[in-house]
Image (tube, rainbow, N blue to C red; front, side, top):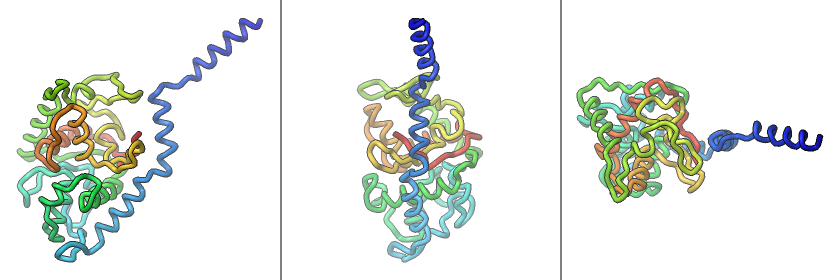
Length: 261
């Protein structure tokens, strides 16, 4: 009888055991109500309306692709081609353009500023707020202009390009199903990975280092892990990769700003 009871209890505990990914999902859900990204959102909204810079102007006339001043729904349609700059831009690089043209800041100087400092920290806060204004919306990057199509193809090649001391590529981690690192699932990013996964989760607050990360920093850190040199902020390479990931996320719902380990 004792043996039977023991086996039943053992089986019961086995049935109740959760996978590592389920445990991490529950951990994120518990933190979500108090996601520190809320503070960055509030700062970003204030920065959007605040008159700043050499021209003492706000960003309320910034065109993020849906017309001057329209921010709702803009995040899920970026990167995209902009006629005024004649290039494909993501949210962060487009914000720098607006800070330069509307407020008079030096865009090149902002691009050289380390993440989390000075005006670069403000760019991250602005991106966090604008992303939050599209939360729950489905990604729908245009991908119709010749440059948008070119950036998608370049991004695809970069995704599979191997190099560095470890001969890694983006696909080394995100090129097949069922991969994990540090007890976390690595989503397959060559197709739509699902709502709120991969591209659809950034900007995100990183609990492990207490920092808010936009997609530019996320890609920068991926290059670091591949043992590649850091790409320049707003470079064609990072925007091409974002274009590839964003188009692949077509139809997925954004949960940005998310919370990460």
